[in-house]
Length: 103
Image (cartoon, rainbow, N blue to C red):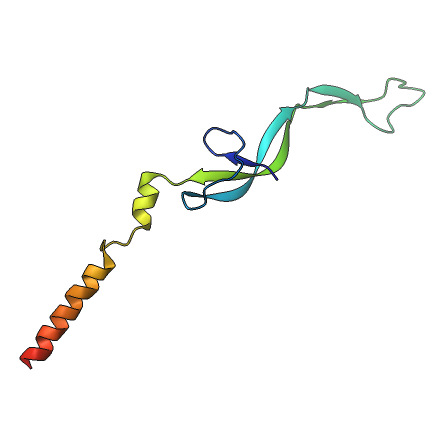
């Protein structure tokens, strides 16, 4: 299955999954023409041309995978709210040790 870039719609050979993700979808590869067809079983001696119906134009699609590159906002939202977790743990340990020493 082909992988396409979500923004440019161009094929992507090896998407960087650390900078984005891939999801399933469809891509439009063409479009049919509008046409008129004779309905099956409607040709009779009384009506040799049969009944006709209009077939509207439609998109031709194929399944594909889309590659979404993370935006700066998405990357920021994935970061922990407190920033550096080691610094937070160091502060908690220092506060605990200070409380233990005073007791």
